Image 1 (tube, rainbow, N blue to C red):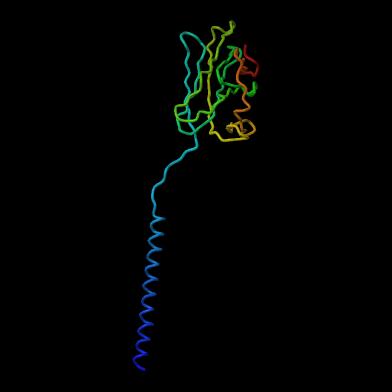
Image 2 (image 1 turned 180 degrees about the vertical axis):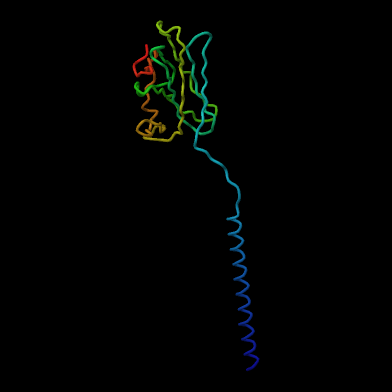
Length: 200
C-alpha cells in the first residue's frame, strides 16, 4: 500500500514537471515569435509633394517666350503657369498643344495631362509678346510663375487641388478645354503711379 502511494505521488510529480516543461516551451516560442516580428528596423521614406522645374527660352532677339515644365520627382502631378506683365507695355497671346485656360480672368494656363513620373514634361507653351509702340523704349518684364499639385481620381478623371482666393479647389482634367489654334490673349495688370492713378 505504501508502494502504491509513492508510485502515485511520483506519477503526479512527473506529470507536473512535464506540464511545467511544456508551458516553458510554449512561453519561449511565443516570446521568440513576438521578439522576431516586432524587432524589425528601418523604413522607406515616401513623399507626396511633387516638384517641377520651369524652362523659359527666348529665341534669338525676340521677346517671345517658349515655356515648358518638367516633373523632377516620381510623384504624378498637374501643372499650371501664369504670366505677369503690365498691359501698358505689352500684349501677350499664348498658344500650345495640350494647354488650356479655365478662367480668362485669373490668367492661369493648365497643361491638360498629368506628368506621371520623373522627367515627364509638358509640350511648349508659346507666348507671343508684342511691345506697344508708345512704350517701346520703356523697360518691362514678363514674369512666368508655375505651380504643381499631386493628382488623384475624381469622378473618373484625374484632378488636382489648386489654390484660389477661396481656398483650394479641385481642377479636373476632363473639364479642361484646349486652347484654340490661334491662341488666346491674356490679361495683364495695370500699373499704378505713386499717387494711385494709372500710369501712362
